[in-house]
Length: 449
Image (cartoon, rainbow, N blue to C red; front, side, top):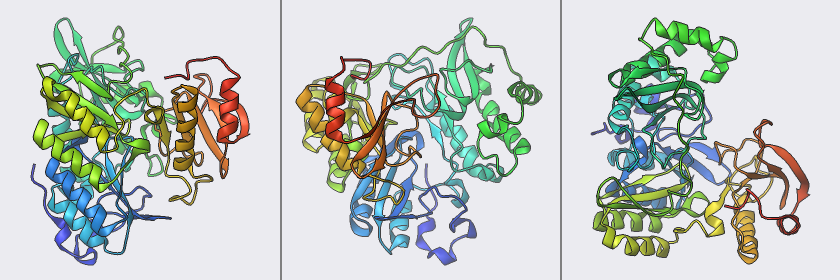
């Protein structure tokens, strides 16, 4: 898909919609300032980036920023530490085809797919055609530009590799009923929830358009997310109004099977004779050399593209089975983590006090100390280190959360489905070393990955 190049004009001569909009979320056309400089978020259609585009991101990060590139938990990329030459950085990214079709369409490109969409052996449907339709409509119809930059849609094809714990404003999940494919759907949740109804396969795009339009018709300006609207309007009332716009079918007997953990790391078969190879960016961080190396691998061994994942990792699809071991070894040589047994591969950490004014601790450095400690203990734990209660690095609740309360000190929470937020508070004001002693005193548990 070709994108117009808005980057050739200085900011004050671009369309007014390119100027900073009233939201704190960074975008490609809106650089948001942090302690370590500007942040530019590059939204990737379906999480896919071409090798040449990855080279352009690497070059922009080196030329106009501090070289830090992050994989986000929404399968996007962002560049940190951007200096004063924002226009040139934006122009380079737009010239690479990484921008929206229209300036105002950047914020609303929030459609999440499985990283293995179209290639997963267990998929029921290929979600990519519907995703392309939805992304086109989101950008081309001005009404949808009223949506919040956080308003998001998930399209689930029934893949085994799927992030099912992120809540979305609208989700569609593949279902086969009486031999006919279709879409179950729900509001303000995930495919693990009970569906609100279903539509035939051909009505998927119409359903998305109807839900978004009805939301905009009913929501006040301060109700930016579907959950905000449903706090005021009963869910069944919203569905009843939706049924007047698009024919809905009951879907009470369907339940989404759980995804399989760890399929974003290592070598895994596709639906054909080829495989995909996945590796984790340590704590979500990449640099220009890593990104260029992955791009070159994708050209040599894959289809000249790769995919970002909601686990802050990436995967190379369409690799020949006999070349997979070499691809994984080369990814690891670039500094990526290719095994779920590596403690660092299981840890999530926000930017921390090194780059964020809200953070109370250097979470990235502390996460590496924790990884070293776990390595010595012979354990791998799923732990999220958050510098403040906003939980920017994790859109879902992980088994254990360390919430910073001071430099190098954290409160420990364990996930509890009966409690909101991070879960049940277990200990206060722990250092990383004290956490190690706390773990030593307890048997292996569901925390161990």
